[in-house]
Length: 153
Image 1 (cartoon, rainbow, N blue to C red):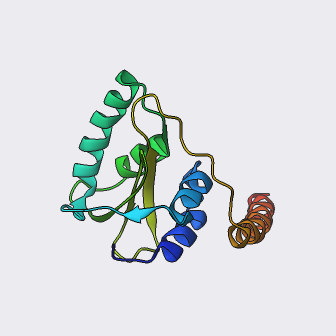
Image 2: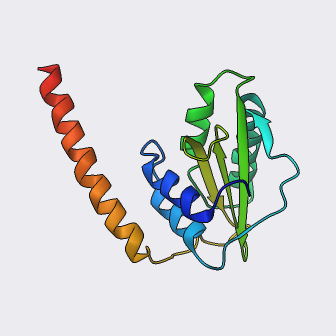
């Protein structure tokens, strides 16, 4: 893995375009989650788009629950086909998380957390440090939305 679990977790929490970011971040922050072999860390937006569209169909057919998949597909659809991305793969038990970023680990494009067929996503407690970061970020996001609202008037 090219970046630490801690940085990846923080970057995911900051990625407000990912609806299930808190679930995925809690999975990555969990002590049981480990880096997985990743022979294709360097990839492209076009490859991610093609692979994960196919996986979306497979997930539906095989009753695989996934978090973040729709957001990933939306994000990569807005990128150029040749745009380079880096993939991080993390696993714990029957669950896997794939996280895609631009190479710096800070700007997360998308992330997907999924399990084996018929296995529900893990329910993990949000670590205390993450809860305080979420609270600060929520307040800042609400203030930014309010300021944007006034700017449009």
